[in-house]
Amino acid sequence: MSSVAKQAGLVPLLKISFEKSPGRRQEFRFQRSFRIGRLDECDVCIKDEHVSRHHAEIAFESGQWWVRDLESSNGTYVSGQRIQHMSIGQRLTIRLGNEGTEVHFEVEKLASPKPVLQWGEPGKAEVQKNTSLAHYLQHYFGKSVEGETVGEHTFRVRQAFAYVQAKQKRKYGGIIAALVFVVVLAGAFAFYEHQQSLKQRAVAQELFYTMKSLDLDVANLERLVAQTDSKIGLDEIQKYRNRRKEVEQSYDHFLATLHIYNPKMTEQDRNILRIARIFGESELDMPPGFSEEINKYIKKWQGSGRYAKAIQTAKANGYTSKIANELLAQGLPPQFFYLALQESNFDPYISGPMTRKGYAKGMWQFIPETAVKYSLHLGPLVDLRRPDPSDERDQYEKATKAAARYLKDLYSTDAQASGFLVMACYNWGENQVLPLVRSMPANPKDRNFWQLLSKHKDKIPQETYDYVFYITSAAVIGENPRLYGFDFDNPLAN
Image (cartoon, rainbow, N blue to C red; front, top):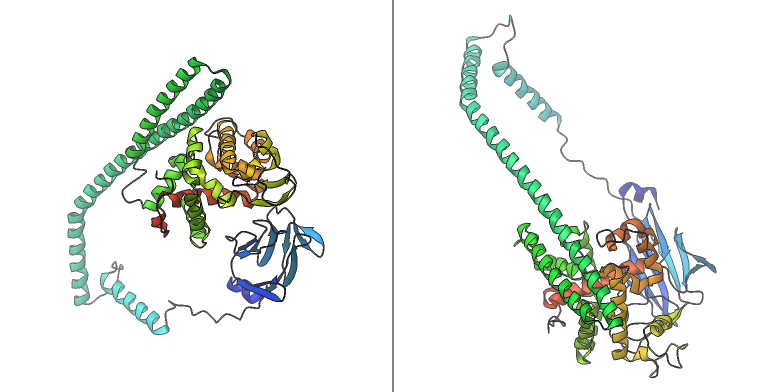
């Protein structure tokens, strides 16, 4: 990067080009971070089976452009060597997968910036005028100097000014004292109100995590009852549910007292808090910038036709109610419906790229190992990337039942009823996420997605982070699609 660019704090233009089809090249130019992958939502979409859904990220850091592999299946290569993170320099060529598309980068030169005009520097005349004004102020209104001789006019001006000063001090002294008393009283009241608010907030947080603990107890009881067919167990489950309902009513009362959903809040922000609550996070514990991050992913959905097309597919084929009912039957939020959108766009016959555990297939993208665990029969084409009528992963009703059971198991065990942790497990794999989760205290307050990000963000793939926020933002849009520019109503409304 040139010294001019460094001094000016400018980001040089990066040109990217690749061969889209034989004899046809495609070019892009960026001055911001961007992503390359196979999905339409990527800034640069390359339809090549060697390219992962989110393959690589290009970012401007420390004064230069860098390319970073996003844990892609087939890797990113430079001169035949697999790389994870590499400076682009002035130009660089990478290959997406050992036999995939070649992508060329070239940093374009920046023009020298024009000199910046500095405003607010006084001229000589202004300095002289200010100096002259200061002289007159001192002469007529300054303190008398012992032995100083002044004219009668100056003496009378000073005498009048001293009289006015004394009168104003007496007049405003009482007013100032009264104002100070009011300010101190108001400050004391505000401090008391603040302390009460903090106490109420702490109680509300405890109530929320009591609800989460009750959710886990109910889930464990349901599993036990399913194994023993105990009538006593069913009665206990109902008691827990009644208790949970009471706690939730108390929690909602505290939210109202604390004005969490205040009248000035936009409907967009209300939807974000509501969906976070549905997925098992407290409105009182949202990390700074959460709403802004969700809105960023909402814009990605708005900039792509994928959301509307997928919802249309689900409604036209009757998938919406079937999926929602299966999730509700397992005591799960029906908004996990949007997980299938992110996985497959509701395509029951889709096959993902080859992974070290085989092809993921069907609407819920089960890999062979998890499919067998949840009693889905694998077909003879298990090792081929194509639809298989004999493979139950491609039979959406059976696959949906299995997915609901799988999500329930994740939800009610180590994930501690955190919907965001469940999504992370589903995408990255429970064997990757749960060891990190188990390193945290075994309670819902300390075992959630925010704590996972705080303690292990360097270990979590960008694809998994994106996955959680794409699903959550899709659910937020689903609360009122027309509010976000889509021409249909909430698909889960009925």
